[in-house]
Amino acid sequence: MDKGCPVPCESRTHTVAAPHQNSRAEPNAMAARAEEGAEAAAASGRTVVCVTGAGGYIASWLVKLLLSRGYAVHATVRDLSDEKTAHLKRLPGASDPQGLRLFRADLLDRGAMAAAIARCQGVFHVATPVPSGNLTDPEREMLDPAVTGTKNVLEAASAAKVRRVVVVSSMVTVEINPKNWPKDKIKDESCWSDKEFCRNNEDWYSVAKITSEEVALEYGRRIGLDVVTINPALVLGPLLQPTCNTSCQFLIYFLKGGPDRIRDKLWHIVDVRDVADALLLLYEAPAASGRHICAPHSVGARDLLRLLKRMYPGYPCVNEDSIIDMDNHAPMTSDKLRKLGWSCRPLEETIADTVGFCEQAGFLCDLQGAHCRFPPVYNKI
Ligand SMILES: NC(=O)c1ccc[n+]([C@@H]2O[C@H](COP(=O)([O-])OP(=O)(O)OC[C@H]3O[C@@H](n4cnc5c(N)ncnc54)[C@H](OP(=O)(O)O)[C@@H]3O)[C@@H](O)[C@H]2O)c1
Image (cartoon, rainbow, N blue to C red):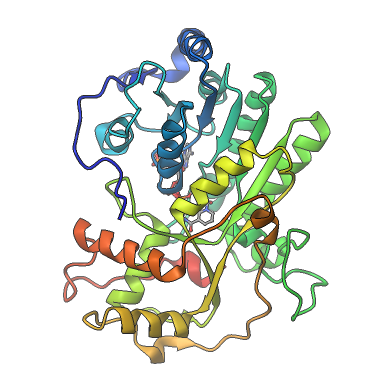
């Protein structure tokens, strides 16, 4: 199992805003420093790309991949503390003179985002809140950072004249109650979830993802900016960061069990390392355009539970009676991505690596302790 760089190493990673500095206060100075770094990277022949939300689950694997392929990476994070960035600084290649540069930037801080994106040739827009609990103020917590944040990133990318922007969307923009889509027809990139249905269901995560993907594609068409999107399924696989993200809590709940009921939904699943591969492919492949579903494996909740019980008989697991029947429609296809040359791991390997990692990280201990909860977002989407 690849767990990144487990041995801490002395980091010479460049940081553009020190933890005590307010990035809003000096955007010009930040931009100047970013330009110096980008010029040095260009002089060294490296392509400079920006990754937003770089400390997160998917983005950390992407940063690791980009550094291993010789890219210079401008990584945006909201918090420069070690808890959020030490795993990035330890990545192989991070401390190279033109390796990793960290930028403190909230999605709603246009100046800070622009400073991170200035002089980049490409942008991977990964950052979006992925709520693990209920939202109290969906506009502020979810819709604003997702939608206004995406606009800020696109405007900065356009000003920097980047070659391409790869935007991380989600399966939730494809598969939720699509209008005029026959029940038995395989879902492809022409299929859009029903945003009003999601809004009426108070499924704010999906409303935010649908709106931000629409905004991104429309902005690209209108301005002539090359924007491509990826629609990953539920993402599993080992983590590089020290904290457990929302989608891995999904699998932990299946193994630990808890008081929540879950639907027998047909889940599409993809490995986080395969998502990172797909993101880089979408940046590099000239033929990439529009949306790209990245959802290779599909399994119902009951079948997933059976598979987990067979692989891990020692865990209490979700009670089968707590699974509610559900009428599932035809799955999604990842053929468009595969035709660009993408391939992926088998589901069993992803599950084994996720569980192995979570056991080692201590996320699966305390089986008799506090109730484990199913992230509510997964009973909405
Ligand atoms: N995991 C999945 O199953 C899955 C499936 C399909 C699509 N996606 C999409 O993939 C992307 C990454 O998800 P993930 O699973 O890697 O989640 P994650 O680990 O929670 O990462 C989300 C990242 O977004 C950042 N972020 C949130 N709000 C922000 C804001 N206002 N300003 C700047 N950064 C902000 C977070 O920063 P902090 O660390 O500071 O909070 C974090 O780095 C998201 O766009 C998500 O919608 C995920």
